[in-house]
Image (tube, rainbow, N blue to C red):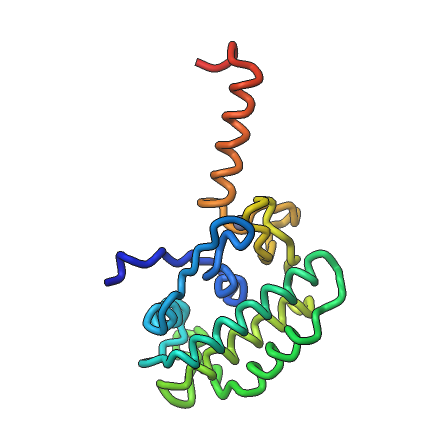
Length: 191
Ligand SMILES: [Zn+2]
């Protein structure tokens, strides 16, 4: 079953990994959580395991995702935050009842109030989004330079000059396109 769905993109920032479950928003959009089961898979991979998900919960998750995308995009270009998006993020954050747990090994784990509370997991994601949009964490929101993507990502590079949301996809594609354009302009230097 798993093979028929697009892979997840793994990032170190929870909120923007979540918005990355819809990619190529300005091209041929790729939906990486097309079914409730795929959202369950994504939550497991991101340390927020639930045992089930309804269609309504998936819809709520997508609403939160697009709200984070809208607010993070506005923050990246230093524009005013869209009020409806802020409302959805705040509602999701307020409804979450997950607890941060410190393991004996010194790691943080999330404990949901029940294994079917997708809302608890969404609350953790919403709170993560709030922390990066509010500038509480070391890094800067930026937009992917790929014209078909323009995803908001959290740049934690030292120089804050990262250009792409994901090096393996957007970054590689841009590099390849530039290489081909250069070859065309100057064929003698190629092979
Ligand atoms: Zn991108």
